[in-house]
Length: 255
Image 1 (cartoon, rainbow, N blue to C red):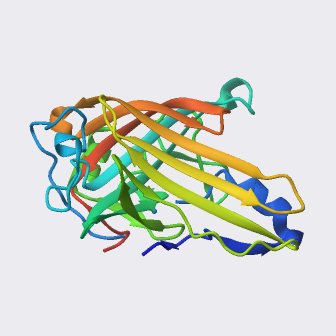
Image 2: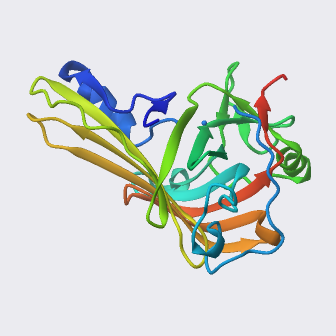
């Protein structure tokens, strides 16, 4: 199956809304399946996540299961205190025969939102700009199982391509009057840990192509494979670090 669910991948889009789409293409919202795979206490092979360098359908990648992904980054488009930001989401990886299902939930909900959001004087809460880190209660929420909102959830079925897992949409018949949004997902092996890559693009015969890429490069694997840390980069303008913490699974908020 080559389709991306929960997203607008490979759709044809009228040029009249191209300007709006261009603003969101680099931030395509990504995110319930209930998955609970324990990480191995001993990492096998030369690269984390690919047993003996090859993740077969029975062994599977070592990063199978659910994760809380926390990113801290600086935004070159902002200045001063507003340049330091954070974002988090839930990722779930599942085996599907000889394929890998990667699901993302961009909205994670904690029992206590301390340090994550602040009241802006209205009935709405806004995300704080400084570097939020989960406290002990929030870490317990992560390890016990993440509550997620399904809004914005996206999922793709990746196939093996040499050493990597990849998903890319089939190419639609080009049209001079339409703009097409294309998204691809990939996981590459590396000695220090897996590299997660998401690419977005707007394609048109009449306009200049717009491309964006988000890369999570693992630099350290800790706690017996239950914690990954590394470098984060989006479109060359947002740079920082990420931390992936293994969760028992995910469930809908209120379940």
